[in-house]
Image: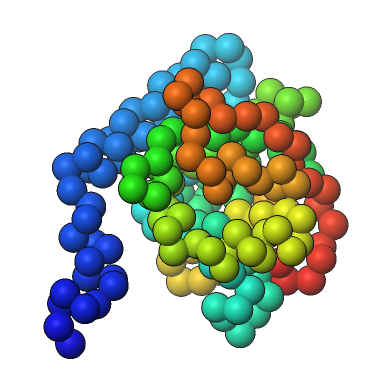
Length: 188
C-alpha cells in the first residue's frame, strides 16, 4: 500500500515536535497538580496511561464505548487501591488540544474524602466521531481502565462530558462536572 494513501501513516506523520512538547507539558502539569493537592492535604494518586483510545459502540463485539485507558502493571495496583466509582463524584480536565489531539490530565475528585486520581492522557478526537455519537446517544461518556492484558480495573461515567471531547480553554481548566451515578447500563 502506498504510504501517501494510508490515513494512519499520514496521521502519524503529522505528530511533530509540537505534539512532543504538549505531552511533556501535560506530564509536568499533572505532577504540579498532584503536588498542589498533596500540599492541601489531599490523598492524590497519579496513574500513567501510555495509551488511550476513543472507542464507539460499533467498533467491538461489546457495547462499551468512551475513553479506553491502558494502565501499565506498575500503576494498576495504585489505581485499584484508589478506585471507587461512586466516591469520585466530580472531575476536572486540564490541558490542550493540538490538531485535534487532546493532551489532558483528567482529575477524578472525591470531595468527601479529599482524594483525587490524576490521569494524564492523550487521544485523537479526529478519529472519535463514533465515540462522540455513542456518548450523545447515551447522554454520558465513560472512561474505562484496563491493564495491557485486558483485565478491567474500573470505569467512570461522565454525565457532562463536553470537557473530554472539546478542546480545553485558554486557562487550562475546562470545567467541573459531576460524574454520573454508578448504575450499570449494560456494558457501556
